Image 1 (cartoon, rainbow, N blue to C red):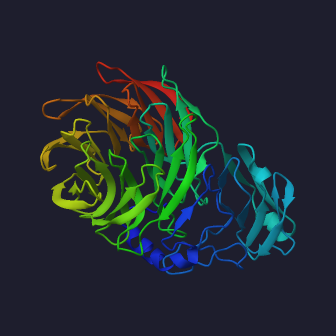
Image 2: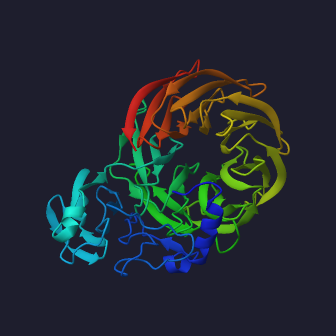
Image 3: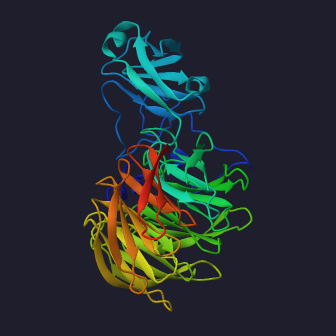
Length: 497
């Protein structure tokens, strides 16, 4: 997944080719209770004879790998049939056939590329499959490769808990070169805090990067930052079954790349406390990028585009003040990094700029405490957290200094009592724990606890009893209990994302 400032050129070029890739600013609807299955086409930019390949050629698109390789390398369990691209180190013979666990699959030969039809039954169970090629010189030059059928999400990026504390949701970008990402669903044991899977994840869109649950617990909104070869990103809307917690895809809206420059690759989503407005930080395109504003139907969850607010740099993380009067946007990657402050129009949800304040190096995540008096920003480049106080009348932030974190802090959450804060450190694979001074908002470290590989998101349940961390590189979620007196975390184990 391409991230950072270099998206600016790639995603702007992508916008020129969206009509070829099926992205035209439209809304993709799904019937109630349904979910969108992964596409059966390889991503745009794969060159070949045109068999099951979208024509999205253009400057800046990624070239195919050379040598033995597969696209995709994995798929979600229970997915639909798809075309597997097998790339060799040289041309295959005309009678080459792809084998899946030793059994032939319908194959089309195109030089150094083979297109094999993989059925839904082939990926009906979690595990691995061995892919080989038989016949001719392709058989002797192609080494066996392993394809993974994943039972959970791959590369989790964001975790959130519904306002009842009964369900948790995890957005995962998916297998490298796979068609879409997914959202995993869990129930939460009210006594132990342990997560139990609700079954196979539901499909989202390309690159789910952030998700948020609305305050009524009826909808989940997912910011998909896209795959620059095929789409410039979108926002997916899911409805929540109040009894089971299961998600159903309601609609997906393309990022408004054609409406304004710098409005591609949604990277963060936040819901207004009223549930009437949704805000999406768009990280891609030429900087300064934008913040998309949507009006949300409180009955159906459907989004109506309101417009774009300009960021002061590259928009990476957005949060709404608990009063609903203000919103804050982290401008990351670019120098100088900052936080943009906005006033919220209570009728329309439109944002009015209130200026900026400096952040640390490579800021990536912002959280506002539940009292609305303080805000915190993680700075991955300077390995610290910026602390701010908030003026209750105008929402203006004032710097309160910084506090050290672990390596490459990536996400921060404040517990619902406002007494504790937790920071995931993607570089040191742990979580920093802090107490919060109720008068000043200052953070005081109370230790660090191990997480999985590359923890990138943290959330706390509404009761303040449990914390959950999404570990991007170990493909799981760490579960913790919270000491109500000290805020210290105790590990409860992990669950696959």
